[in-house]
Image 1 (tube, rainbow, N blue to C red):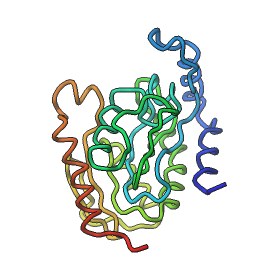
Image 2 (cartoon, helix red, strand yellow; image 1 turned 180 degrees about the horizontal axis):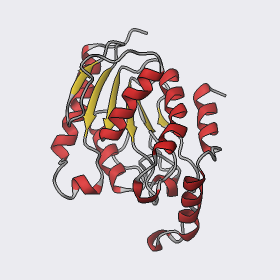
Image 3 (cartoon, rainbow, N blue to C red; image 1 turned 120 degrees about the vertical axis):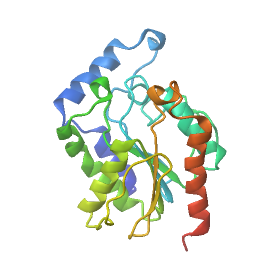
Image 4 (tube, rainbow, N blue to C red; image 1 turned 30 degrees about the vertical axis):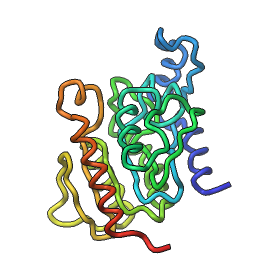
Length: 232
């Protein structure tokens, strides 16, 4: 069994946060009417993608009726519709949709994780829940040895990537990178950090984030990888 598979098994088995355990299981039990025939996942959601990925996408947490229902990150909700359409457009995914874990989706050169692995009430993890889940991000970052570009979806993911990097012993640049949509930072340890607004309905329905804006984020990631290919 690969180290990433072991990590993902550890994620799925996690019960560190009583509030999140109670919420994810309640959602899985009560369901949403449109998904009443689904057998909800109702557990922590592991990372997904190519173990040899050069691109790492970091989100916030699974959606209650998205990843918490399907068992795959950014799958079965509108945020996922935006993400996988963009990944497909730029050659990181074999299809533009992510409906359920058995739909044939595969990623190339891309791996997706989250700062918190359980669906949180009101989509707002507590500081203690972020801290409890950070070891999973740290392990992913250590295992994705070919990673060269990190796209963070939202300010929380952006800040938590930098925090995780410090915990890995990587000294952040000064001044510290500031979040913004389409910001690009070439970090001292050979990784490019790209910020993006999160493709949540709050952002996409209001026009704060448009498709062209989101596409430009992954175009920048693609261009950075093409400019500095990793030697095998």
